[in-house]
Length: 71
Image (cartoon, rainbow, N blue to C red):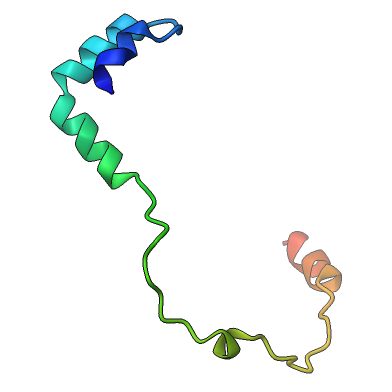
């Protein structure tokens, strides 16, 4: 409710209310653009998203970093 902004117990509430009134259309557009929609249906196969073991060993980066940091 943009009309109630001027009554908020925060510093600059009246100025903010005035600016929102001046840019009302843009303020509502920004609210729409920044709203995260959480109820969107998603077709997702959870079994297909499982990570498989790769068999790769852990690579130690210290020797590589030591050689490249000297350059």
